[in-house]
Length: 302
Image 1 (cartoon, rainbow, N blue to C red):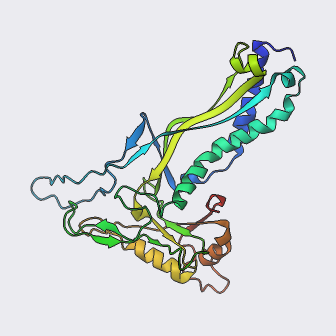
Image 2: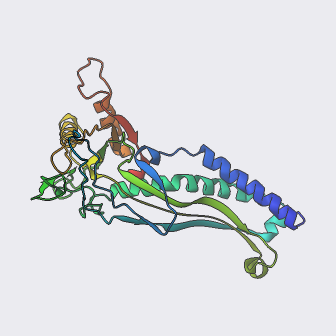
Image 3: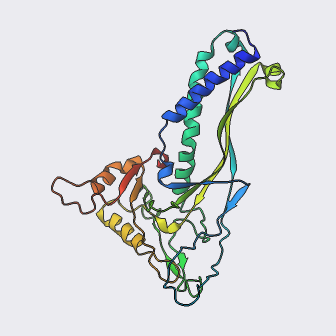
């Protein structure tokens, strides 16, 4: 191939087509447990977390509640993936060896939100959320008054004991029916493939390398802890029932029920069999928990 600006442009179009095809063909699951929130600055502050809207009978004037604001922020982070194509390979029409790289780059870009979202869920026992506690914890404060005053009681959304049960995998029961899911995927700039192929580029001049790369600015954080429960108890009827009971009993400050409806069970591959046995009706119809939640098995929790 004779290297000209037009031939390099055509090559980039071909590489981008492979990249986009892989993106289109790559399945993802992060949208099932995370809400995408656009970002237009360095970070987003979610001061309204913890303020569940509620109704009261309208008698007299409206009651305006000055609820405590939470300073929970998610800072955007930059991510990249890059490859170099040798000029000699382009001259010798040997570019076919690079197409799998761009296919894999497209797959990696599409799957990256999965990687971030499920890694955060897995780290929930050691990562803070809006109330200053770890997202999965045993002592989330819930107050007796709707304005967040009074002596708080401790509420658990986790039954994870790595000392007594060090080898038990953790499973997660979620309510993903709300506008805000348990995890927030924050996007400042989408995944974009770019090229540096000008003849006067330093890498071309010194190393005869044309550079291609993908970058994005995104990050993840936690939403309401009340929408999730983590456990490394055995995944059986007893443990599942306990998690459902705990979630359905959650209240807002002031004691108002939150109406939590656990509807998604998220497990690593090692628990797929147990999860299917729990959620699928058996031949005799004796499984009382059949159909009570959808099942999501993800390798990102391995």
